Picture 1 (spheres, rainbow, N blue to C red):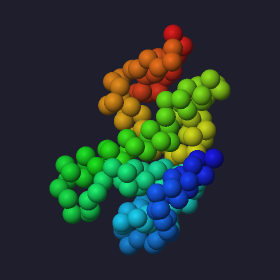
Picture 2: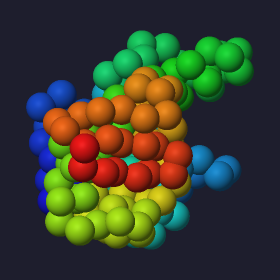
Picture 3: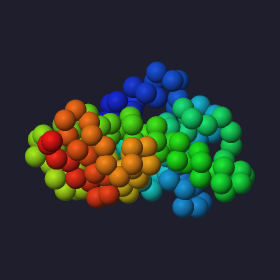
Picture 4: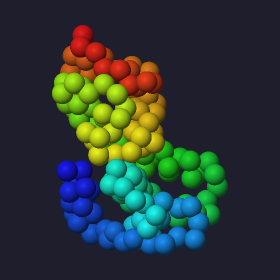
Length: 151
């Protein structure tokens, strides 16, 4: 299960995960080696997506983004998304889903145990990294929308 993989990542990096009631619309906040998840996150898929993104911040950012310029925030948000996408929905996992017969966004999200917004951000990351299409292990991946075909 994805939650087990994320918990192992937290443990391995000595990161604490806590639930917190925010006064704003934050889903999460990273403070030092602690990730605070909103108490309003009410499903496992969203919790996994937010936790993976925050772990991405832990791995890619050494600064407080709350008061940084918007372009700096955007850069580090992208880096967190990239780290999270590669961890949670690597190309091998997408290919495995395809080989199992998955075709819709909803099917992939259920298989990956993530929510749709995170899945779409992950596809956006891949399109920036690889372009609109990418050949991998004898398959053609198109990212917008996701389409995988055997070559």
